[in-house]
Image (cartoon, rainbow, N blue to C red; front, side):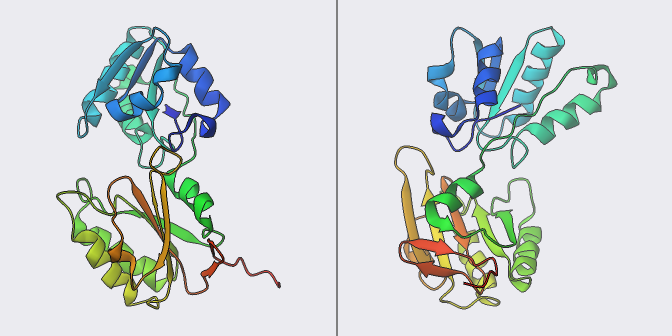
Length: 240
């Protein structure tokens, strides 16, 4: 399992690069394969589209069982909304596959990549919540938003909006407004560390005036988060 980081080659770890070079078979979502085209040198490539994650992981396991060295690539970190958990579930579903040697190689995830571009908004306790309800009931996502708001966490939102799912970000904002002032700083990063990168710092009152999609990460501050110059900062508590 190889974490590619946010997408730019310079933010990929040396171990990730080496694993791709050593692999005989590279498996991944087609968009992620495109991110590493320059690193592919004659390996067999197996790619599938969105929503075919189980099929993709089963292909990878089948190649590993046959004796190939396989790299399953995932954007960000494979253990954060990635394929590492699914691979492990499939391996241990069938006792005959437990002998496969597995290495999980971490990567820079969207939350930390976006935070670095915004400044230092994650300097205190934070939570990451995906607004996609493809695999998680929307009622449970709303419950988690309420809990995050009540706990005054900095909240990182993944998958804030899509072509078919426009209202979840509207509801998420209304939930968080029950616990956070409308002036709470909000950072919106699109295509973090990739071509077309966009960085916006706004507030909870005005965040919906800015476009958001599946390539966006939204960082909503806590009650102490402030905008300092061009940066968004959540104080750690030091005497300054």
